[in-house]
Image (tube, rainbow over all chains, first blue to last red; front, top):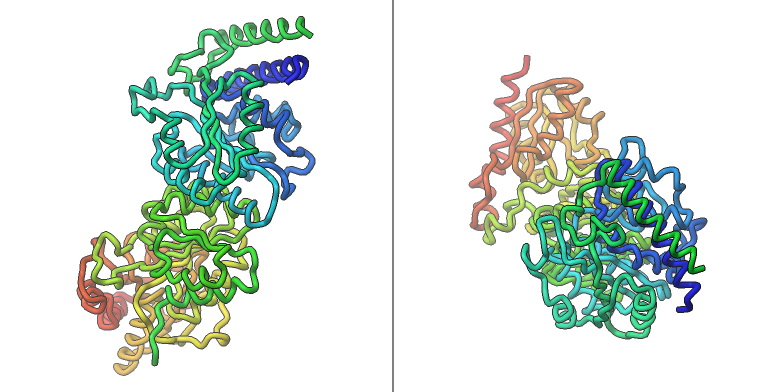
Length: 282
Length: 313
């Protein structure tokens, strides 16, 4: 990836982080921590990789993205707004009574949302269904799904992991947002799913491990996944929960707590500084 | 006359409609021999997906297929479809109102020997409270054919309740034409209304004959469509007869009788007696013995009819 492209993506990512803070702060609730950790993954998918068109959100040939960890809705909404699927003005209505931006994404209310999610563990199965349909119809679209690392404690994930390998769904790429934290603390202390790489390997998946905040590594991994035939790929992305906001980083407490006015202001100031330093670079 | 179970009819009908509707795909969870979806599988192997013993994955995979324009029929036993995978049905199918058809076989106690763990008596209650879910419960092969047709033609989630037990023909295929949300009047009468669904329609028909032999005029209705329910027909029966017996192979709490009563109490209250399982789990036994044990019989419908007629004002 050339430097200018990377810089541009970093700027978008920072704007998306600001939007996550603004949404959760205006709602007074929501999940900033696990939204911030997945920013680079979604930024790359939506601004570089995926064949999607906000003017034609139901194009049968489009690539699909399923946010299996549906609580990261502010991340998805921010990306969809930045892409033009929804208006940026809607974002401050997040979680409010007359808004379409539900606490967890509703595909019937928001264009660009491919699946209603929120109850954890179901998105991988849904993505499998989309990938199966693609194979059946001879379509060339790819299906992406973002899983939380706490989420994979759900048994259904492993049912779906079997299904994806059994049906050789090489048109499916999963991302694991491996930030290491869930509501009650460290995933390894609450109920360890480790070693996640060995588990997915044993389930017949191609496994790639990357730094989930490094666009170059994301790009390389996504490209590699497309070359793998006969099995699905999971990209285990090492991430930082709360990434980009100093006082939120690596704190489980920011899983499902919104920043108050002062905290939001501090977070936005930090992010603005990051944005300014990116501007200086080009 | 040869008896055909509704699950058998389901398997045959799917294979038949599979010819016409190329978007139909069938998913099963290691029960294709029992749900009879193997008939479809043999004919259209590329459109059949065995998901293994994983009903949660079954339902959500079907949801994913539906988002891409497929018409998935997700099939397994009712106890797993509505019970084990309830959250998947609610959140991944019901909430996004996806076009998934759930073929739930082996409902009720009439599966017999397998016993309570497999005898689903709560599925009508669970499924009909999911907003937008259509709930169908055919009584015989021709009705099953029609229910599958309605399911295909309806855009949105549908739950089809099927039985294991062979049952006699009530209708002739090709002659019966069902409409979504409409019941079937088998005969009109003035003394008591009997509304039945699924397997209990057969007992209701016998009960009506027994009552008529005693000079009772029976308004007899088969209700294959539990949701949306035929409000107009229920009210007509209530107005004509002034008292109603419901019959279902299901817990009387939250089931078909409850659905009928909800209509009556809000519009035209008349006394109701319910034949069904009285808030119990099932038990093992030969199907006919188990049905007798839980009083899912024509005799019990007659008893309740006599009781409810006495309650009329």
